[in-house]
Image 1 (cartoon, rainbow, N blue to C red):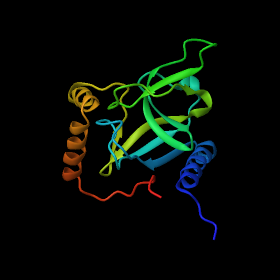
Image 2: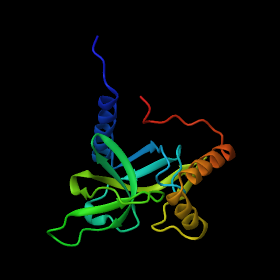
Image 3: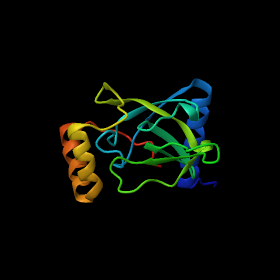
Image 4: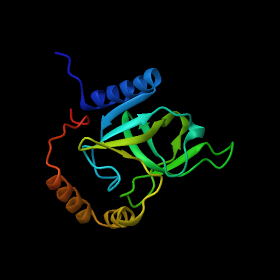
Length: 165
């Protein structure tokens, strides 16, 4: 019997996402995790459009494909010139930036979020209560867990994760 490892499944999902973006220009998938709280919640459906690297701006939520995985994090710094072709991304709820992103890893930009059947336009920056919540969650795992619990109680619909094997 030939068995696929979880890494094989995750890698295949990334390759499929890349192919869909190349072929159709748009992709939807369910977000998992809490690294982008409060802007993106686990179970939200992300709508990603294919864009060229020069269309990415600071504040955009970019879809990154790396190590066989997909990650949607906010762009916090653009390349500084022809010799510096890396983008810096960071989850809104994460205390530190991600490893630098190279051009081949940029797959697209999140243009909309679907939450509880409603379309939410993606903002390039967090304001007001969302900014405050991101700062709190960024500094406290307990606060992140509490936020996830609270939002799941307010919207208890079951969401199947694409990241589960």
